View 1 (tube, helix red, strand yellow):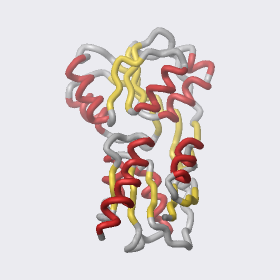
View 2 (tube, rainbow, N blue to C red):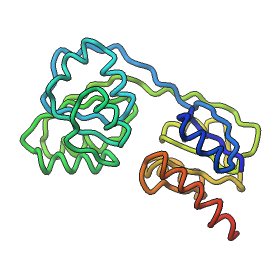
View 3 (cartoon, rainbow, N blue to C red):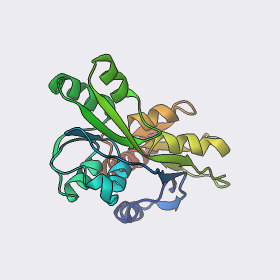
Length: 225
């Protein structure tokens, strides 16, 4: 089966895909552009919802100096791992922004938060915090630029890892009726469903579950058709 990945994959995921008999083509449909920011202080409770925000924050000496001895909350296993690699303890990790927002306004309603994020982001945290009068300061560390590619070939499956990549893909491409989409999570799937109903969602937003979704589809669901 021929797969198109809409970003450069980790070596481990690429190896596992090849081991399971998939051929793979990779194109980066988005680009991360760090923004010029100055952060003089933060609240004691910090929110990170992406790996990109963690990488940029901890590579910036002035920002990094503001991140010591804070309480961390994040979205996603890889975001948590990156924070821990940088010596930080994560109090709560959830699979999506909505789940994290509800947890925080329920359990930390009297606290104030600093949110490190990109310009393109889900609205749940800000909207729920505003509704509950929970103090929140936003630190936009990067922008997500769309980098569309015109795909001339037909693929059996297309792997999507973000709503922005979905948007970028469909700027220059249409959906082939024999193509199946594979989404890393529900928010990505919500973007893809505007264009097709032919997609699978990983049960958990990580590479292992995405690979399992691929294997299940091509060995079970697809084989029965």
